[in-house]
Image (tube, rainbow, N blue to C red):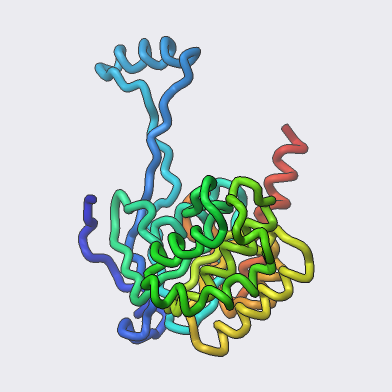
Length: 272
């Protein structure tokens, strides 16, 4: 991993004591290597050969020079259009990915709800997956056993808890994943669109549990296209566009900027 030279600490801009930060990101960037389709290979190979290169791929930057700090106990929403870098940012925070440049410091135990079925083994039962997922999230087998009843009750899976995960619907996967994650005594919770799936009653139940985590001063980073949820639950919202932060502050203002961005995109497409 390439480390950038030290840059200005964003916590200073916010008037925040760095020791109070749960998350501190300095100049983080992440790129993906995209290989050309076969139909493109000849054209780009000729162009690159003329340039003295032989590249068969191009680099796509999902995040560019992102710097921010999030205080302990803060609930921060991440918004932006598809492809803006939201999910990449969460994957960097939980170390599924490593940045190509910059540094990321997350203090304390992390619990993640990123993708449906992530961390699950489709061939084994929900019960066995609880123990496996709990272990990934940092719980000992003893701790997982002590919380097993509460996890199963929250998931509302009943006898299905003994059935293989591959027989579950997407809603059942959400219930199980959320039930495990919120029963981890974590300091930082990373949630990516997980509440967009499932029936309305279960969504309310999950949101009430988030309220409980807020009362217990847990740090929450919530990615969602549902701006009403961001406005209701978050004290701060960050707007990403093409991998860069273009707004960071009171949720209503960031959401207004998001809507302006969407309107300008729609206008540009109409004029095309």
